[in-house]
Length: 210
Image (cartoon, rainbow, N blue to C red; front, side, top):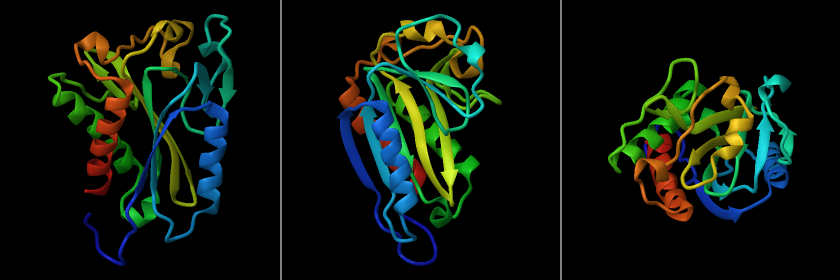
């Protein structure tokens, strides 16, 4: 890893499996509140049972159909999104002050990690102006939202791998009416969520710490 100044501790990567949303969110908050200037960054890779999360800017009208899936109001930016089995979630617990770049740069690096991973599997993906995340032919394959506290981030990105996409039909994904969503399986990328999680961790580490 590069960078001027004092030595930076190596990030810790945790593969957590399938875990409930709210306890994981609270654990991110606690980790961020307790970390110090020398606490190593962490990258958490996991899946969640079905849940909608509503960001701080979220509007109730973006939940457009009743379901039995819980809706959890949370403290990241952005609107409503869906998490469920078969989607890899990467929570990025990074001290950006120590990295020496800003939040926009971190977001760009995270997006590039997904773009590069998909390119390695023959899929051309891109950003979309004004709508953080990654898109393939106009359909969203990865959503992104962060919270920053005292120069440290938590939350992260959600990457659709091999999941039931039907729950997205009950929302305006990330606040965009009619936004199409897609996933790796539909694009001919044969990765299990576990395989995708390990790959995504590698690409994110390269992007964030280069």
